[in-house]
Amino acid sequence: MTLQIALIQPQIPPNTGNIARLCAATDTSLHLIEPLGFSLADSELRRAGLDYWSEVDLWVHPDWFAFRDAMNRDRCLYFSAKAEHNFWNAPYRQNSCLVFGSETEGMPLRILEKHPERCFKIPMSGPVRSLNLATAVGVVLYEALRQTSVSAPAPAGFAAGT
Image 1 (cartoon, rainbow, N blue to C red):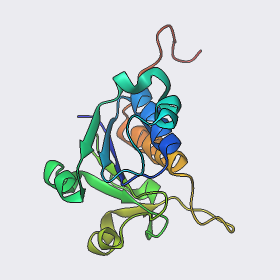
Image 2 (cartoon, rainbow, N blue to C red; image 1 turned 60 degrees about the vertical axis):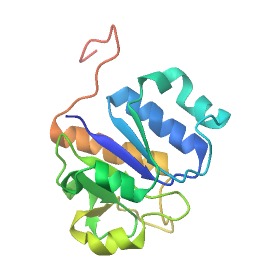
Image 3 (cartoon, one colour; image 1 turned 90 degrees about the vertical axis):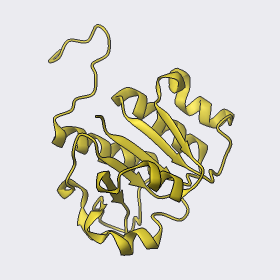
Image 4 (cartoon, one colour; image 1 turned 60 degrees about the horizontal axis):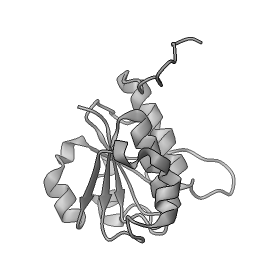
């Protein structure tokens, strides 16, 4: 099993497009939990994902409850600037689902309250409250890949160490 990314009600098309491209590059499934703040046919979304949409294992769930019914809760790790634990201490497994809140609302409070031991943050200093969603997903996904020793596939013609 591979890692999975889930976005709860994403709002900004280029962020989701960039995350889709990241998922294509790492053979990671992408779950979008509706309602979305855009159409999947949005030109900004498509442009950010470039020509990689056909390579994305994309799942669209009509709401949180449909996602929760489809995904084993023990696989889910939640990421929020409001969490207490640092992301490098998350119990990543090869089949983990890395769940992120929307750009405007963040992780729903009910999840933070119900699963505090499964909620993690990317530590930041200074006046910055949060990172861009696509940046946060990239940071967390590559840490999960590193910790689970799952490496992203090398591009065709690429030799390791060159």
